Length: 147
Picture 1 (cartoon, one colour):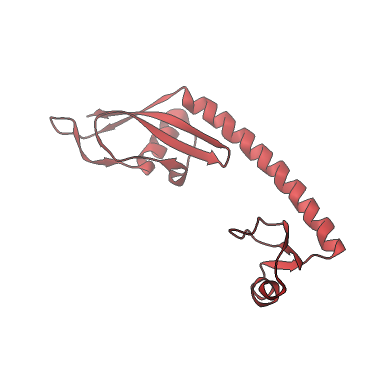
Picture 2 (spheres, rainbow, N blue to C red; picture 1 turned 90 degrees about the vertical axis):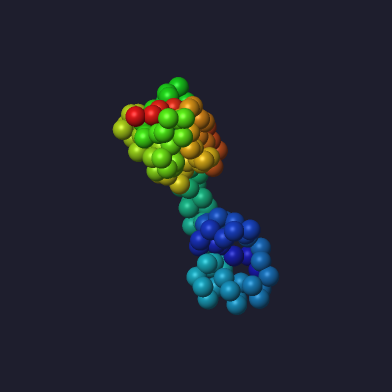
């Protein structure tokens, strides 16, 4: 049975996709939960319009993410924290700390969930991975300095 997904389903497709599923899966799970509708002619044309809109939105999001990436790759973000005599930090630098430092120094707002920070417990220079879009992942250079 052909159905149009009304929400993203892992392993099946994204919202607006037309997929082939078994009749039982559609009747017993997808339709009652509101995750899909039957692929009629009118619904298919509406799904194509939704897909075009999603593709345009995705392209603009990708372009904005690439602009942010090109601005941040060239910068070094400095975070000043309390540290002991041997350069060990009292605590650690988290993704939220990096996001706050990027916002204050580069005036770009990032969500902490977009950043992948390894354990930073000593003073030094680190590479933090940022993923702003499915296709845009880049490193941010973070310098951790002692107060």
